[in-house]
Each structure stands twice: as C-alpha cells, then as structure tokens.
Image (tube, rainbow, N blue to C red; front, side, top):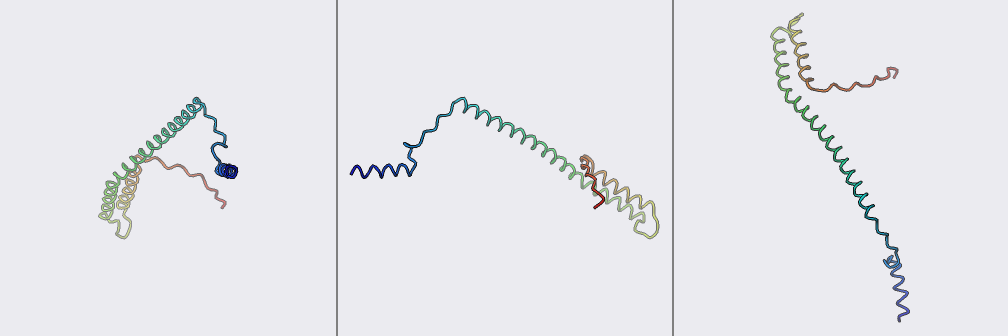
Length: 132
C-alpha cells in the first residue's frame, strides 16, 4: 500500500509546484533593499515637487482669471454707458455724426483695454503658408 501512495503524492507535489521542489529565492541584501527604498523615496519627492509647482501655477492662473472676471461687470457697465452716450448724441440718426461715432469707438477701445488688463499676451501663432 505504501508503494501505491508514494507515486500519487509525488505527482500531486509536482502538479502543484510543491515548495519542497522549487528553489528558494536568495534573500536580498539589506543594503540593496535600503538603496532601492531610498531611490523610491527620491522619486516620490521629485514627483511631489513637480506637482507642487504645477499646483502653484494653476493657482496663479486661477487668481488671474478670477481678477479678470471680477472686473468684467465694471467694464460692461462702462461700455453700456458709452453706447448710451452715442445714442444720445444721435448715433442711430441718419447722416454723419462724428461725435457719436467717436463715443462708440472710445467705448469699445476702453472696454478692450479694461478686459486685457493683467492678462498675458497670447503667444504668437506661426505664419501659415499662403500657397494653400
């Protein structure tokens, strides 16, 4: 009976990849473990610094947008006032009316100047090929 069980147990151990048959992994040197962990810590610190810089830039951009949006109501009110001045001066009437036209143009220019305060200029686009 012992002879018939031994091959079955050996086959089961081989099928399962038994621990007695697999070579044990060599223990890693503690110095290597420490070096690997230090490398991971350095990578994590670098990634954190990069994220902090990106977060700071996003916060600055958000503050710029909020300031711009805060000035928008005043700019719109000023533009509306200039448009009302132009109407009062006869802008909608037939014929030339330089004073009313000047009021409209000044209002638009003032509106544009107010909106562009504190904003960075847009990057220049590369010149497109005109032969298309």
